[in-house]
Amino acid sequence: MFHKTLTHTAFIAALMTGSNSYADHINKDVPANKASLLNFLYIISESSSCWQPGKPKMDIIDAPQHGEIRFRWSTQRWAAMRESCKKTGINGMEIIYIPQRGYHGPDHVRIGAQFSQYANGQGSSYSSDTFNLTVK
Image 1 (cartoon, one colour):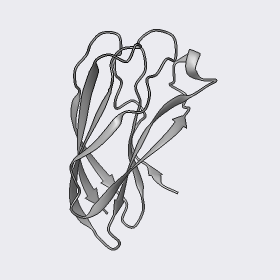
Image 2 (cartoon, one colour):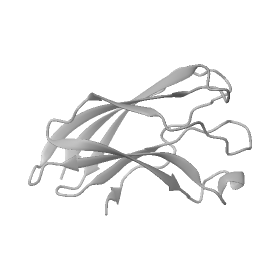
Image 3 (cartoon, helix red, strand yellow):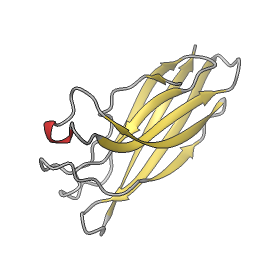
Image 4 (tube, helix red, strand yellow):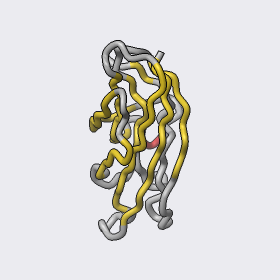
């Protein structure tokens, strides 16, 4: 299927505190000729509940020159997950990079996400990550 390359905690939004944006530059090696999970973006309340807003609106700010990006909504479970969420899992957006067949070398992509900030649907926050990739 695809090669998971990052931890599941790269994005965590504090929905009840009015946090604005989170930015990161991530250097990552990815395999040639295979789809790679760059990140799993999830948004969850800081409370002990597993409350989550709807799907974020995803943007490709800077598209990769030697591949493509796909987004897929999924539910994940992992050992470090908050205890109250382990039975249900966490919904989030998988960010998947697919290099051009036969390509080896550098690539770059910047992804953004806009999401609801409060339980009543008012307000929004925006996050972005920049991925500096080396296709090996």
